[in-house]
Amino acid sequence: MKINYNFAFFDEGSKKEIRRASLKAVAIPGYQVPFPSREMPIARGWGTGGLQLTLSLIGREDILKVIDQGSDESVNAVNIKKLISKTTGVKITDKTSNATLIQSRHRIPEIPLEESQILILQVPVPEPLRVVEPSEFVTKRLHSEMEYSGAWLMLFEEIMKFGTMATGADHPVFVHNRYVMAPSPIPRFDNPKLNYSKALILFGAGREKKVYAIPPYTKVSSLAFEDFPFKTEDFGDRACRICKSSGVYLDEIIDEDKGETLYQCSDTSFCMDRINNISMVEGGEI
Image (cartoon, rainbow, N blue to C red):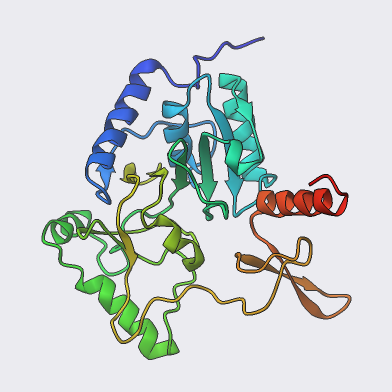
């Protein structure tokens, strides 16, 4: 039996409610706005917040890209693309530069985003103070008072224990000189991409029913101490084993047969574009 869904799955009233929350989030950078999170045909924790934002914003002329930890072909990314494609019929692309709407989990693309693009990040825990304060009522009060000593204390304890900031991902950021915000579990390497980004960046947490945003050209700084500055992951002189790129975020791959560690671009689209460009140059087409 064929089932005819509304365009982008949701009814128009649901889309409007989510868009209203998104507009409020854009108007108050870094502020967590409650939104009426809907039940989705995927399990919570698989990106329901980001998916709801995508479905409420997508138009018939949009070109969609979905990535999961840098990959366009992970199980999560593929199934989200299938759902959106079946309910909208929009074009799907793997090329970051071609996309108008990008939904991502755990990564920001290597290619700088443009003003015509929107990046939507999936968020499991939107509250940066949740580790030190379990009460939602109290965290709201702390944000209103700009009382962020708990966030600073977490960083201080890491330095005392490990001798360095040990936040492998989701390192808190300070947005527009006002709110401390969880940037979603992106690696520290991606934090600087949030600062004065040309693209609108939206964050959706389905289980926690929160949406927040970083509007274009907004100041974003990673929390750090004056005598212990923020540092991103350092891959030294290592390069991708496939496209030979350096200065990008690399995944570690253990070759058990050879007993060695290999490195590969996390952003698969960037890696493939780099290979194609190298092939064109070597083939004399450029």
